[in-house]
Length: 430
Ligand code: URA
Image (cartoon, rainbow, N blue to C red; front, side, top):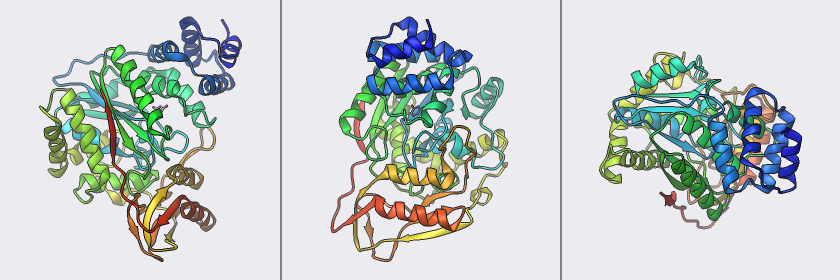
């Protein structure tokens, strides 16, 4: 077997054998497969698909490309993962909240992918934080604090680590097979008992329409359950940015606002919904309403904030994380609405791309990010805006970059006479 013939087979729409897929995943982790071959494999998969059996084979092969962890802890081992969105910083709030509710959360996360932000990049916007920890430290943190948000160690799903970085810069993210294998290889290798998935749907998601998002949710749930992990998925709206900000440090700021009881918007609502569903599936709550109120209670009491602070300190950040330690951009520019009305449509992907072009995401492999840049004070579909009033704030490294992003924001947001808010949760797949 060799990479060229496997890629050729995929390109010519031949169904790959399980052995070929396993060979390719092994090649990703041991370096036999080059970046160029990984990119070609990703592109051919995006275009032609692997089929149901191929998707399961890639998921299992990438899971088994490294260690598969097992845990012996006095509570359920759970996690949440999103398929990727803009302003989606739920993980930074939910992991500590779940830990405060008695669950254990070994959260292996990703970096920014395409136009979407990544939890690890956001966490590393806090000065000193390094999410690349050893497995020993990961275990100590999960056992001692109840949660740890880390990058896959060299030993956990190394095949995904490589393919993920290649997909990020080769426009090969939007594939049900690749997203399923990427998410689940990490999650299954982390040894979870229960998983909730947030499958994003809309202009800022990898799956734009409801039927594609539903197909992805079903593929994720059936593949994970088939591998023995109790899993459910919520399909949720990504036609508006989830938090009112997009950009690494700006999103950490929003999380701190939620964790300090200073922000009670859709970010908290979705965090509680995902957490509530997960607590029920993990048998820590009797029904979803109870689960949601448990999440809200540990946030209101400050317990979740305390867990986040301890996790940040354990990852090398300040012992007293707060908004004041976050980097700030040198230029902040207000984008003003051209007319009075309601936001009727947002090209959320364009907002995410604007953040990438400001330097908050990667245009090439290994690019160093500017953690301070991004957009804040973003509205949602249905929000009222006044002519000359703020539509968004651009945080940039220089005036030219700020002007460029301001134009992108203006053309991404449509204002009409009236517009209704869109529902936040579209479907539950169990
Ligand atoms: N998150 C992941 O970890 N992988 C993807 O492919 C998409 C979102």
